[in-house]
Length: 110
Image 1 (tube, one colour):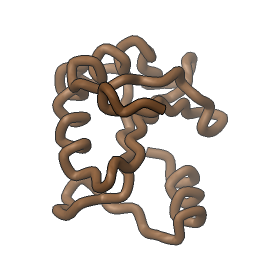
Image 2: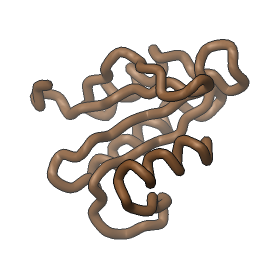
Image 3: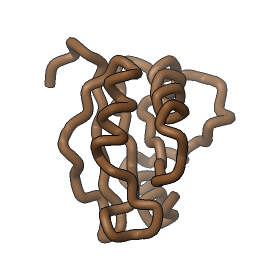
Image 4: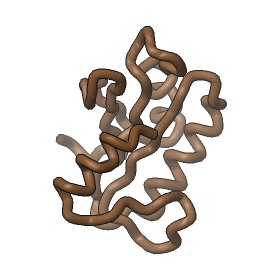
């Protein structure tokens, strides 16, 4: 993960981010993903994250940008999202080193 992005999110929301060990519903989910991580595991992580997501909050997968160490193909994220029953948006620039892909459950619209 990128501590500067984490700090910006915490400043924007006024809330501390929790990690994967948190055991209650959450308002949103950020999954940090790098190339070399198992695509099938990403599908499982997405399903698990969506299960604890309260009130249809946002779910994002952040990956290093192309050309950066650990850059994951957006098609890998899109494929894993589809397997998990989610639609993946076009990657957006989150910072100089990270892209973000917003996921939504099939049929949830914009």
